[in-house]
Length: 139
Image 1 (tube, rainbow, N blue to C red):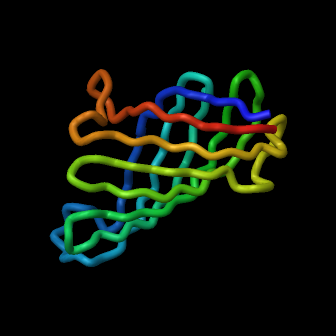
Image 2 (tube, rainbow, N blue to C red; image 1 turned 45 degrees about the vertical axis):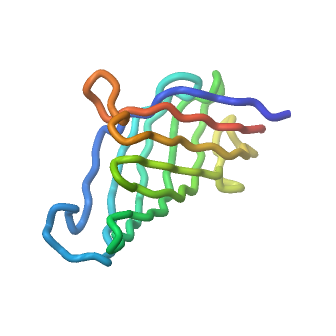
């Protein structure tokens, strides 16, 4: 039976190589190592590895793998999500899927999909880079 989890994610660290403001022309590739803190139905921390493709039209497409460790609606463990998304004009759109076989602890067998969308200028809550997310899942 599918359940839904909701909450907020706060970006706590972003290290991009080469940096976005390095003055390099597009198209180009970059790697970002990013950390997040989750609140709500998922209380967790994570580390994500993104590969970003900066395009000549100003849009950045990305793919990432994120390992999340914590408590999902009272159930402890970790899992990995595969992400795909875009940055365009200050807006972000991300879709993710829980990787089969990545659940540990009491989250073994976790499956699901989710994501978030942030309109331009709306990616901050209380002065932090934070946004609302959702995850439809089953164990």
